[in-house]
Image (tube, helix red, strand yellow):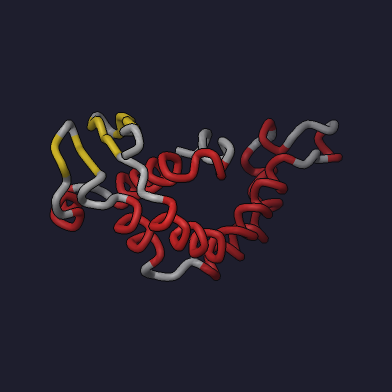
Length: 145
C-alpha cells in the first residue's frame, strides 16, 4: 500500500491512502471529461499576459480585471458539471478503507459529512485529487483553496 498523505483541513487532520491506479484511472477519465477543457481555458486565461495592464500576468491583476477574461472557461465548466459529479469524485477518492479523520477511519462518508459544509467537502475533494493525481496535476491545484 502507498504511504498515507496527511493534511489539516479546518482544524481536522485528514489522512488518505491513494487508491490503486486501476481504481483511479476511471475517475481521472471522468474528471478530464468534466473539467479538462474548462480548466485549461481558466489556467490559460489566468496566466496569459494582459496587454492593457503593462504586460503583467492576470494572476497579478485585480479580480475585476480577471473575471471577464475567465468567464468563457467558467461557463464551460458549469455547463459540463453534473449534479452528481462532486459526490462521485468524493465517494470514489475518499474510500472508506483509505480515508481517516484525526486518526480514525471514516466508515460512512455520508454520515461523517452531515455536520460539515459543502465547502469542507470541496476541500476534501481537492485534497483527494492532490493525493491521487499529484504527479498528473503537476501542482495546478496547489494554490486553489
